[in-house]
Amino acid sequence: MPDWNKCILVTQDVVKKFGGLVAVNKVSIKVPERGIVLIIGPNGSGKSTLVNVISGVYKADGGRIFFRGVDITNKPPHVIYRLGLVRTFQIPQPLRKLTVLENVMLGDAVHPGENVVKALIERAWIKRESELVERAFQILKFLRLDHLWDVESWKLSGGQLKLLEIGRALMANAKMIIMDEPIAGVNPTLAHEIFQRIQEIRDKLGVTFLIIEHRLDIALKYVDYVYAMARGRVISEGPPEKVVNDPQVIEAYLGG
Ligand SMILES: Nc1ncnc2c1ncn2[C@@H]1O[C@H](COP(=O)(O)OP(=O)(O)OP(=O)(O)O)[C@@H](O)[C@H]1O
Ligand SMILES: [Mg+2]
Image (cartoon, rainbow, N blue to C red; front, side, top):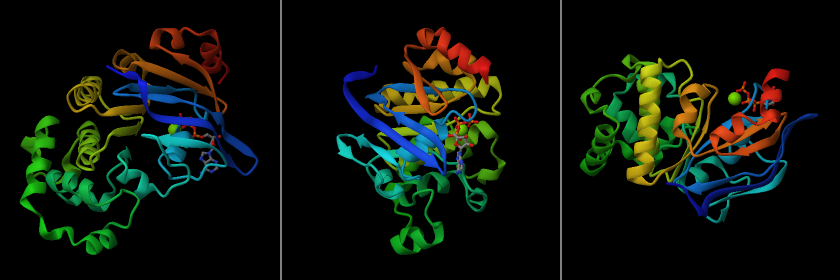
């Protein structure tokens, strides 16, 4: 269960502009430790931009971001990653030739935004220490992907790839995982399974989640708290049933 006495992530009046467009306009959110927090909002409301600023992909034009009490505002993505705040990324094409196990192991070595080859050479990771293999295997077991350990990743379904992205994040010792539309294009059965795994990872490993998702019919069943954004601002927040019934939120969706 989320611990509201300990907020693992706090943003204060975060601003991000693209030229004249204020994509994120003074957004303040709190994410409790062990929470599963959802961000919703119509297309273009600034959800992805916000998480890109939090994870260091974009520089903020204003405001502050604290993770585990550390000011991470405008820190480089790999520094934020090493602190345990991991945003999952689609596994890039070249890495899909690697096996499922190898891809999980890479989570320990490389930030997704880094030049993989360069990073691997610098860290001389190729040794494949048995300890890392063991850990990666445990993670795959947890995700029920262990039977696929030797399969090349391109052979996985979209939903299995999402689980693999989570596996890489766990290998990176993530304390908090940010996911942008984890169940987009995933069939309903596997979509529920992904959220069940997310809950299990929270319950058993104590990992916190911040998730952007449009498929509310599925996502709302699994989350503790919701922020709704529109036009770069937070327009509503609270438990799922409160936020989705908030007239302001309904209007934001209908108004497009
Ligand atoms: N790199 C960029 N350069 C210029 N404008 C951008 C950039 N990224 C996003 N925007 C603009 O910022 C606004 C917010 O976009 P963002 O992608 O954050 O929305 P979103 O809530 O994630 O939408 P969706 O639900 O469609 O993914 C939009 O008007 C978008 O066109
Ligand atoms: Mg988006």
